[in-house]
Amino acid sequence: MSPLVALVAGLVVGALVAAAVVLLARRRSAVPERGVGEPDAGAAREAQLARRLLDLMDPAVLVLDADEAVVLANPAARGFGIVRDRRLLVPELLRLARDARTSGSRRADVRLPGDLVGTGPHTVGVHAVRLGSGPPPTSGPVALVLQDVTEARRVEAVRRDFVANVGHELKTPVGALGLLAEAMQGAADDPETVQRFAARMAHEADRLARLVRELIDLSRLQGAEPLPELVPVDVDTVLAEAVDRTGLAAAAKGITIAVGGRPGLVVRGVEAQLATAVTNLLANAVAYSPENTRIAVGARARSGFAEIAVTDSGIGIPRQDRGRVFERFYRVDQSRASSTGGTGLGLAIVKHVASNHGGSVTVWSEEGLGSTFTLRIPLAAETPPDPDSPEPAGTAPDAVAGQFQEGRP
Image (cartoon, rainbow, N blue to C red; front, side, top):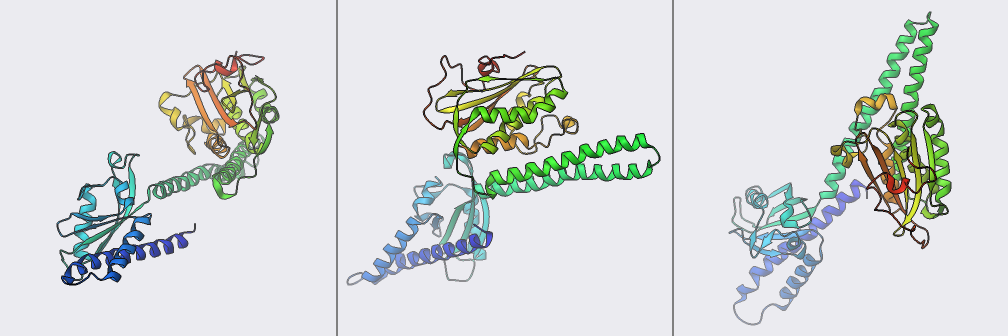
């Protein structure tokens, strides 16, 4: 939904809520005043329809009287857990109601405590409106309209961080290319220096190209483009493609990639995306493994999923960083970024590929012992689990690597 459409929809909903609240307030005061004869059937019917309208609306609606008692609360409002009997339990909402009595209307974001909501803290956008018709300040009723904006605010924060991080990451290689170009101009009569600077420029250009490519991939995975139709994909083909893509980088460090596990598994997915995800896991393992070591990659069937595990004997991940390694641009060791050429997006891409396929990715790691990343993708058909299936994925490197034709070094 575009911002303009969202704004218009919000205005329409707000107008309907306000109209219904005002109608209810009028009918609540008008019907008792008749005093004699039969109640106005039309007014009662309108009040009933207005209350029904409020009960069906997504926004939470509250009406407070002059004593700040809750005289009306629709199911959405009570679902937030902020009303007990006739009391409003959130002081910030009471302050907004008092301000609205003076100013006529107030808007603000309010954070609701997790112990009230029951599902963790929520942020709500609140519109407080004075319903009384007298001059301010008035002691008339106040309506509070609450809309859950938790996810919207989270997305806004992620977008701000993303833009800031992209700017920083792009600035580094672009700035380096500019400085190297100036240095080459000053060393035009020194071929050896020019060659050294040219090699460095090629490295920075490759890093910049990789960053742009991964930003495009991440944008596509996050919904900029619809996910292609999921079709049967041969896991062996995915592993072979990923090993082929990382073969040169591994050979340059004398690293052997051992492939094993259960052959013949088939998942439902997009082959290109799955190959990219496994390639990123292998490239990460190569980048953070010592020279002349071995990396193991393989698959097994377990609980309706194909588990593709990549195990290395690298430097490992500190405990405090394990929960963040799948965040965009997050690096455990910032000082190694320039030497490894990493962009901080590889594991984020793996996470989104797994999510788009209805799967997940987990990590087991110990500093100095290495890491095991396990990608779980739903199988295309019922496949019996591997016999003597070991402990769940992500608990230890040998859980999957032990099944390989070649084990860990």
